[in-house]
Amino acid sequence: MAENATSSEDFIPAGLAALGIEADETELAVMAAFHGLLWPPLVELLALDTRDVEPERCPDLSKAPEA
Amino acid sequence: MSEPLDLGLRAQAAAIAAGDVDPRELLDAALARIEQRNPALNAVVETFPERSREMLAAAPQGPLRGVPLVIKDEWPLPWRAQRFGAAELIAPTAPGESGPYRALRDAGATIVGVGNMHELGAGSTGALSCYGAARNPWDTERCPGGSSSGPAASVAARLVAGAVGADGLGSVRFPAAYCGLTGLKPTFGRAAMQGHHMAPITSLIVSGPLCADAADCRLLGSVLCGEELAAGDAGGLRIGVVRDAVSEDVTPEVAAACEEATEALRAETGGEIREIELPDLEPATLAALLTINAEALSGATPQKLNRLSPELSPIARGTLKYGMLLPAAAVAQAQRLRTLMRRRLAALFADVDVIAWPTIPAPAPPLEAPVVELPSGAHSADQANVRGGALANLSGIPAISVPVGLSGDGLPLALQLQAAWGADELLLDAAEALERANGRRWVDAAPPLAEASATEV
Image 1 (cartoon, one colour):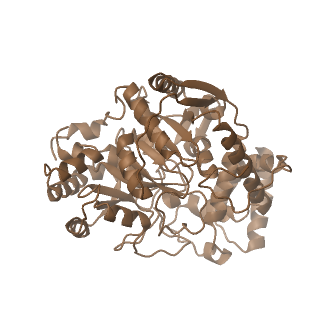
Image 2 (cartoon, chains in turn cyan, green):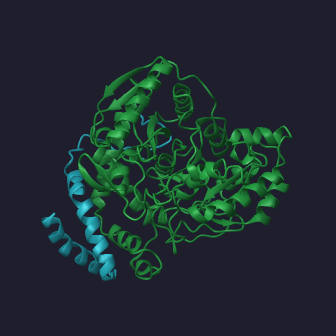
Image 3 (cartoon, chains in turn cyan, green):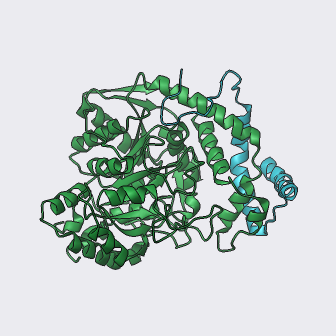
């Protein structure tokens, strides 16, 4: 969690500044907490090997995927 | 409970159709009961008696003629724009005829009020709302569940016999579970969604019914889907169970109730239980979160975010702004995982008819601290709940939450069943089989708040 907290200290202000988004202290605290929860599994998601998965094009979510 | 308002949805509809109940008196009774019980619940955020009476006066001879219902603050009505439980929305809204409104109107129903909801639909507890939190009729210090908090609390408190909610990551099923109701998340695209401010872009959200039991959900669900969800036979049901955190990182009471219910369902249907593998449930949950975040921020600009109302909660403001920082590569990866999970589910549904796991890992937590204690430790209820709810939305499959017991504190526990695309009817059949198996003990249970004054209004 210490690493996450450190990364949020850099990542969030830098990202907000790059996009021109303003945030007050309370919002920053919310973002840091959310980042701590979300970022580790997000990194795991990005690390999943999905090279063999051909994504559906415009999937019809009301039906099973085409084989 | 002998008052007409205490009857279930189909019983109310049948009593009106038979001339045994005057729908004008039923509407007046619903309004009076809202006035009496709602101050303790904050479930209904607005009533409009004259509009309701106009709807009733013009009601056609539909399957819900004269039955009062509550609709979530997620759709416009001709006389009211939705607020989505929030002081401000990124998307513009205006009064209008939404799909659920038209479906209810054309079925002859009377919309008696608008149900509270978790702010921006972004929570599983109902603890945050621009109207103030809705409260759980089973214990008003507890969360009613979200985001369809008001619809669920309204039905559980017998203000009405049915309500329309919406489900983007579990938002019908969680409040159904917390409030001891049956809640159906239909197959994606099957139920009316027109007029929802995210309808053009969402790949996750559906409207869905919240009622006391499965037969009532079948009736209201048929109206929302615009087609009959015909009753069938769940005989020989093949029930898949997953040995994963979603089914095992739950309180002992939840585990016991859900295992007992699953076995009862197997016995009632003469079916079988099969252990199945469904890897990557945790990343699939994140994939659903990333997807709904990207869709919710459609149309958002830094300028808009810099002008967010200070009346939005800091949590909403912070998470909206943080959402702009999430990498596009993760959203793309989420879509690949979505495909993978859909293919895995399609393969699994060749071997099982339904997948069963707990709807919620723990009963409703306190409103003041929505945290649940699980074998893995303390978690926010949102974090714990979403891992059981998100898969159905990510993949598009239907799911239903069914009450299966009460905790030692007298709070409802619930089992979730998920089926293949378009098998909504089978879920209702299975839920009815489960009700038969347990003698309707849990669907007929009413919270003390509803029983104490049942004879007063």
